[in-house]
Figure 1: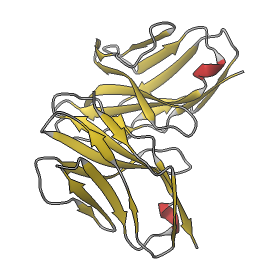
Figure 2 (figure 1 turned 30 degrees about the vertical axis):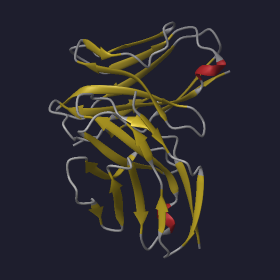
Figure 3 (figure 1 turned 180 degrees about the vertical axis):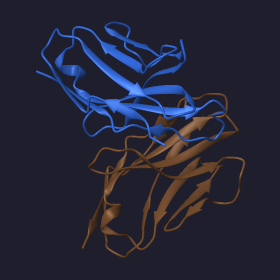
Length: 115
Length: 114
């Protein structure tokens, strides 16, 4: 039973380019969360999605960032026109439909470096 | 808004000794869940232990136990018989009963001294 799969593990982009981060949740999980971790910081919530729906995007920057979780395929976190401040580790997590006290299952993260 | 505070950025403990990591949180909800996650250098987030607020009994997982003080909104993690593999960042986390997202503290880096 594969865990949460994120790719790529490392991503380097030049300023102004686009970054696309992918996340496949655990089998049977229909909730996906994206978190950002700056160096020596905790995880900051960005967005929570279910299939084809954004449930809570209160942590997403208003510009350049978008997320989707299509009916088929992985969830995508997209950052347009990246800047140096976007450099961070981006974690995806998933949980089953009946979330109650279920913990989040995390992927190993994508480390984005903007040069 | 809910917040989670970890007041110890770093801690050290001698191997085989016991260490306690502190966590406090702020919420107006009466029903919620609390978690401790471990993040080793590999960056993977690993669930260590969880506690439901409606349960008075403190959760225990092998060498890991919590001291949950609901009135004080405190949720400390005790690690007994510390091992070198326990060295990691430890994050305290909160999840409300009506909210699906988990809120994390800034973490405590734990060093194990051989």
